[in-house]
Figure 1 (spheres, helix red, strand yellow):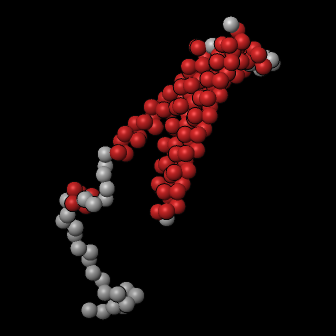
Figure 2 (cartoon, helix red, strand yellow):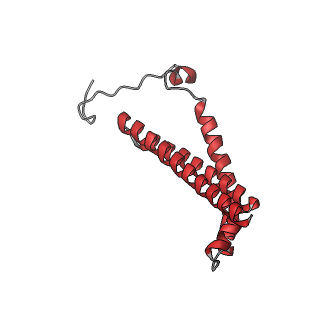
Figure 3 (tube, helix red, strand yellow):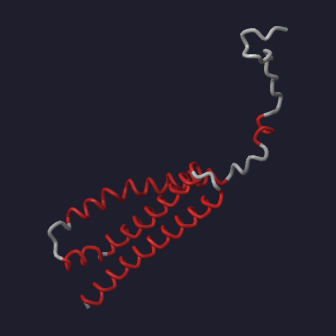
Length: 146
């Protein structure tokens, strides 16, 4: 057989792979946790789609208000509860999104684990601090008005 025109490699047809899709997928990890992650990210996105316009409207209504008026508006239950829901959904959504980015683009295992832990701690601390501030405002207003 001649090697002319083949850069020195003899032409061979690749062998057909007779393995089933299940056999090809075995050993590649679980296919179960990704679905719940995907659904959770979509649910938090829908919650944020509903709450962001409300939050923008609330913030626009506070333009020009003094500090005490802003505290009174935020402390109302019909504002404090959606604000708390927004904080929880936003930080949870951010954590899920950053998790996917780190899993897809960081290929050194110890850096990936370190970044995942940093994201978890940062989102947890941010959410707790925001909820504490919201609760503090609500309780401060409640003690000042009574």
